[in-house]
Structure formats: structure tokens, C-alpha cells
Image 1 (cartoon, helix red, strand yellow):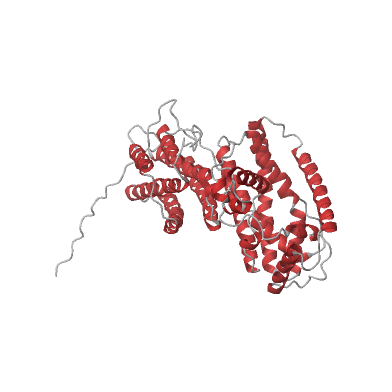
Image 2 (cartoon, one colour; image 1 turned 60 degrees about the vertical axis):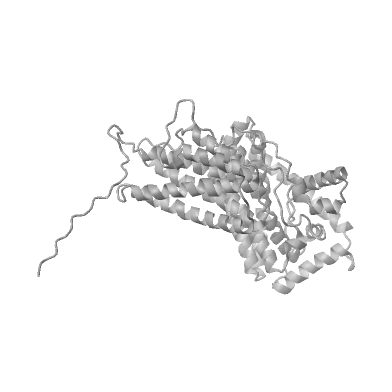
Amino acid sequence: MSTPVAEAPVPVKRTLLIEADSKQKPRTVDLLNDWQYVEKSIHRLLAAWGRDMPGWNDKSAIHRHIWDQAECVRRLRERVEQFPGGKADAPVSRQLEQLANIVLLAPSFEDALDGIYELLLKTLVGAYGEYIAGVHPVHDAPTIALLHEINQIKSQQWLWYRDYRRRHQHRTDAAYREKATALLAAVGRFRAALPVARGEEARPAGVATGFRLSRFSARNEPLKPKQPFMDYVRADFVTNIEARRLFWAYGYMLEKNLPDDQLAWLYYGHYMPWQWHHDISRHLWDESRHGDSGLSRLQDFGISLDEVGFSGYDQGQRDELLAKLAAEQGLPPEEAYRRHRELLAPFKLEPMTPQQLYEHVFMIGMVAETGHFVVKNEGYVDFKEGQDLESAEMMLFDIIDETAHVQYAHNWLPLLAEHAGVDNTGYRERGARIREESQARANQTANELDHRLPRTPGDPCFDFYQDLLARIRATYPLANAASCPPRSPKPM
């Protein structure tokens, strides 16, 4: 019986990433930077078009993808800087900017989604897969590992997009697709690093275009509640723990507004360092999840958005513009309200100046978020003692997130002020002064409401408010509903 002879191993042809004169910088570094630019561009394109997404759950997906993209960029930047001489902000080819701008300047929101997910994302996934298959599995294992991680993230983004397209069928504009596809071919479909000519370096996607974000965040849900119950909540906030419980579920739901505002921060803050974009992307996703937390709690209580509405922080501007459009077009006010998404869609946001961006970050971090820690901590304690542990948990996780967000403001306000040419000296004192003024106004409003609101059964608004409280009470009764002492007033 003969002994089997081992066959000689067949050599595997691998892509070599060094050249004779490359010193210590493999070609992969330039390719990683090209990929990083494209991932950043997807991040910017989602920020540019994300305000146009109307559905609640789809908003949540876009906000999550903003964070996903920030994490993809972080991974690529860290890998670039692991190479001697690797610079994560090294110039890349202007061709990549041209491609990103073509995708950005889509004829419609639905076309833009196709450009982002079907053309850019899908092509990147293919490029990453080919790279993984072609390089040495040991020598370049760290790059392979991070590309596997990124492609896993991309797979979740793609699953959402595929499901979205099943629910919202659309045929991409032919001329748009043809132009974007041609440019994809011209840049080699991200398979090899592009040469960078001096003076022809890529700028951030969109900055050289006239693209403008939508002025108003799109909505599928009603903008207003069936009755303006929040006046009663403001009046009862200090004395009634059940009113506070309704407030926090509803108030957290309304935080879904902030991430759509922050999309504009990201788009118009292109001059800020990448780490700022990474922090704001996390802040944005956190606020989106706070909105989901509030809605989830309302649903636990059997309360729907059809009842309480999903109003915007800019609701006064929406109402004023809708009233004007109704008058101009001869529409009944209720018809203008019903068609709010269609009527408001053409209006665009004025580009945000560095001064405005500084003020937005200041007001959110140093006023709104800093100003609510006392009442939030009281809510956590009261709900925990009242044995509503799910409401207490909602409060606790928000407090944890907001602590980080306030730190972001402290970290970045000096640089934002420098870009804006404003004096940041004494910003803490300014924040404290504005919080005090806001508290005084809120106290006065609550006082006035308490004296003038009807509290007679049969009044539609009072009955609606009482019905909400009764339904919450019946679902999750509080053990301390009668014994909880008065608490701090609502700050704003």
C-alpha cells in the first residue's frame, strides 16, 4: 500500500500593497483615505436630506445611520493613523467631491435615497469585499477586521433601505442615475486610490453647491394634539406627580425634533474637526432615541400620536406659514393643516452661519440640557419610589446621555466661538442668567394658567387632560400618587 504524497500547495495570488520605492507607506493608506472621504460624504448626504424623511420609524433609521456613518469614518481614520506617516485628513481627489455632489443634487428626496444607498453604499461594500479577498489575510489582518465590521454595519443599513423600498416603491430618475453611475465608473468604483493633483483636492461634499436643506422637518403624524392639554400639565407640574409623568413621556417624545435640527448643525458645521462631527452624531442619535423612549412610554399607556400630536419646536412658524398659504390659496384652514407636508415641502432653510451654529450649541447644551437636571433627577426618584420602574429607567438613561451632551458643549464652544468670531468669555455665567430668566417666565406662565384654565367637567380640553391621566393611572398606578410632595417647577 503506497503512502499518499502530499500535493504541493498552490500559491494564492495576492494584491501587493507596497512598491519598490514606497518606503513605509503602503498604497492602502491612500485608498483608506478615499474610502473615508466617501463614508464622510454619505454622512453629509444623510444630514442634507434627512429632514425630508416623514415617517417616525424611518426617521429613527436615518438618525441611527448618521451615527453608523460616524463610526465607519472613525474606524477608517484610526487605521490610517496606525501607519507611519498616515494622516486621516490627507487630501483626496476632487473627483470624489464631484461624485458626492452629483448624488447630493438629486431631483427628489427618493432619488437621493437611491443614490446614497444603492449607488454609493452598495459600491463601497463591493470594494471592501474585493479588498478583503485580495490582500494577505495575516499581514493586513487589522484592515480586514475593520472592513468586516463596516460591512456588517452596512448590511443593517441595506436591510432598512430594502424594506423602505418595498413600502415606498420608486424608479430612480434615469438621467440622475446615468450621470452618477458614469462618475462611479470614472473613479474606478473605489477599487484603487485616485491621484491627487495639487490645487484639486476635494472639499466636503456640498460646500461648493447651492444645495439647501428643507426648512421644516417632514411629518406623517398630526402636528397638533386633539386638545391643548399641555397647558394643564404646565399648571400642575409642581404639585401633581401624575401630570409630571405625562409630561416626561410626552416631552421626551418631542425630543425627536432635535436630531432633525442637528442634521443642519452637521451639514453647515463642515469647517469643524471630525471629532466634533463624531460627538454631534452621537448626541443626535441619543436625542432620537429619547424621542423613541417617550413614544414607547406613551404607547405603554395606550396613548397614540393621533391623540397628542407630534408638534415641532418650530410649531409657531409652521402655523403662521400654513395660515398665510391658506389665505393665499383660498384653502380652509383645516385643509391647509391636512396638507401641511405638501404645502411646507418647497420651503428651504437659510444656510446656518457660524454665529448661529455657536448659539444653537450654546442654547441646547448650556440652557436646555443643563437647566433640566434638577427636575429630571426628581422625576427619577419619584417614579422609582412610586414603583413605576420603567418610567424611572427612562429618566435615568436620559440623565446619563444629557451629562455627556453638556460636556460636548463645554468642549466645543471655545472653537465654535473662534470660528464665529464671538466672545465666549463668561459663557457659563451667561447660561446661568438665561436659565434664571427662563425659569421666571415659566413660573409666571404656570401661575397664570393655574388661575385661568377651566377645571369643570364638560370642558373638552379639561376632559381630554383628565382622560389621559386616568388611562395612565389605570395602566400603571403610582404607589406614591397621593403622598409625593411638591417638586421643583418646570424650567422652560
